[in-house]
Amino acid sequence: MERYPQMHIHFPQAKESELYEKMKQLAHPPWSPQQHDPHGRPAESSRFYFHRDRVADEPSCTVCIWRDKPGHWIVTGIIPDEGQGHQIPIEQYKKILANFESEIASSAVESVGGIPPMIDISQYRLEDYFSREAVKLLQHFCKTSNQSDLGTHMSDQEKWVAFLLQVYDDGNEIHCDIFRYCLQTAKWWPEEGIPTLVSEYDFAMRLLKQSGR
Image (cartoon, rainbow, N blue to C red):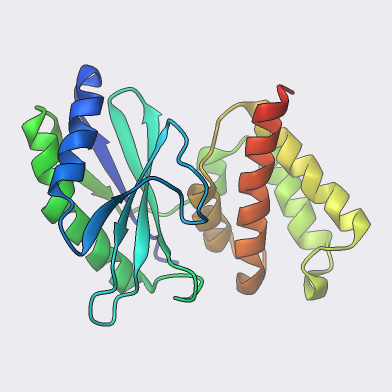
């Protein structure tokens, strides 16, 4: 499976606020800064969003950026607006990402003395992001659950929760978009059920973080 690419943005740590302000200045129509995530929730301090209006046959969407560590942002996903389908076709995705790079990211990074953004097109593999135990638990859930009802039975949910708890306890803070692409690459779960797992994964990680587990 060809992987949906990421964009890596490297810049001087002290220049993060300046970089973000420059990106907002460069976000001319169809681009605009966005203060909430694709689901309307306020942006967390480590996440940044830019919206793109519909252009020709390319859907309106949100570019999602995650601070991996100081001085390093990752464009982890491009999410279509509600009513625009569950996923952007990969060729359109690449065009939108390239447009974000040329119209906003490259000039902004150059202005703060960073290095040109890099687009990574290698495969997403679960084992590259998640612990061995977490991958085993996810595989057990996917391979032994009733996929016809997308794992909604109580016994299947217990296996799913075991995976979520393991991921959180591993402390790697894997972004939900990365989980989405890893799961698509693995092909362990029906495509139509992946958005639900991703949404539940995202909610569980935020809930567990807030609980102080």
